[in-house]
Amino acid sequence: MGIGLFAGAANGLFGSGGGTIAVPAMVYLLGEEDHTAHATALLIILPLTLVSSYFYLSNSFVDWNITWKAMLGGAAGGAIGAFLLNKFPSGILRIIFGAFMLAAAVRMIF
Image 1: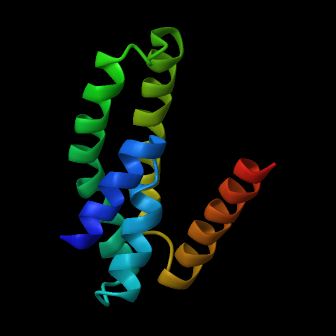
Image 2: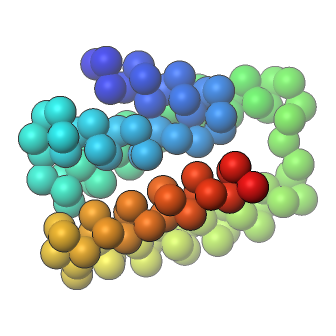
């Protein structure tokens, strides 16, 4: 429950972050297997996203011109990513996930 609370707070505050918190927490704190942690994080993120979206929408923080395009791309990318999840061993999955986290961190700083 603490993982969900922390991931939810990050999602609400930053508009993302649930997966970057939930996946490592489940792997390192709960001992879950990487594939299970990634799949579970997606289900955790869904209600977080719905609640956060309500607040963003009610405060008119959404640009619908961008949103529709990103939603279509996100749905297609989500399907591709879910398919590919089973193709990678855990070690490779950790490297890919870590590289994305590092790239995001560098991008946010600079």
